[in-house]
Amino acid sequence: MFSPKKLLAVLLITAFFASSNIVNGFPSGGEYPPTFTSQSGDWYDSWGFNRNVYWGDDGYLPNIAYESIGSDKELAYSLGEWFRGNYDQRVERAEAILDYVQRWTDYGYDEDNVFKDNIPQEEWAWNADEMAHMFDETNNIVAIGDCEDMSFLCATIYLSAGFDVAIISPPAHVALLIWLPEYDNANYYWDIPDDGREYGWIWVEATGEANPLGWTPPDFDDGDWISYPLSISRITVNFFPQYPQVDDEVLVQVKVDSSIGTASKVLLTYSVGVSNNVVDMNKTGSIYEASIPKQPENTHVICSVSVDGIEDLTSPYKFEYTVGETTEFSPFIIEIGIVLVIIIFLILIIKRL
Image 1 (cartoon, rainbow, N blue to C red):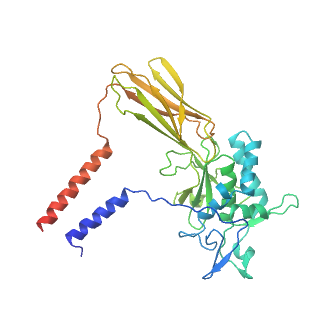
Image 2: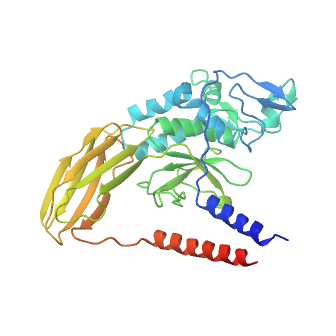
Image 3: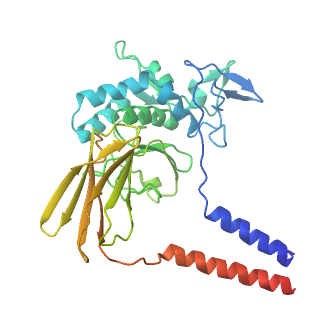
């Protein structure tokens, strides 16, 4: 059994990791087309990822999704750029991309189509560029792959076409979500935890020619799957001081993060009574800033921040404050206080043992 001191240590370590976020990094570089090397019975690409195994730090999920974007972007990424340049409406663009992938890919089992050293591979993953090079529109040749291959291809095309993308991994399957809350024909709208959004992700299932955009297969509508967001466009807004007094100007700072576009303009709108004021925020480094003038006691100020130039940041971020309000303890601060009291109490008990 644990001694009291060991038990306390376990509790403290558990509390620490429960309040921490685990961050994964993905290497860039490598070469295209990749070369494959056999190691202990599995095949690894030139980025060092195992094409036979989906799990683990060097497994293909979601690692090889990053082999066709960023500094390594190539053919598949250019396909998405074409769709972005030729379809102004996001819904039409999203439908056209799925139609295109379904037209130029066919589903096939790995063991029937992938051979290394003349040995059929029971499990194998192609990245997006490898799939894109397999099909030939001129000669009417389609690419053969299974669920993860089509998902990686779709992910790169949708990403470069201006959509936020998440690879998802239900049991024994791989598929895709894109952020498209304005789409009317999905049978489910999904929410990815901790992405700062609500419901608006829709399913992309390219493994069958008849699967429509937004259709979540019944086998996976329980949401029992892991998501790997490849890109998130988000806006972070802070204002100082948090509880303005009559002598305070309020400094508003905005950070815009997006891998699919660049903000052309950030506007701060603040309303006092019936008066609306719009301010073009100034950019300093990576932060946009603007100030709201001093206001009389008890003035209620309603604010919103909007971003131009990034398609999926069309909804303004809203906040408000009342001049002269005093600081209140947030529930989070109260919870921390309770935890500290419990820890101190446990320490005192252990010292008496």
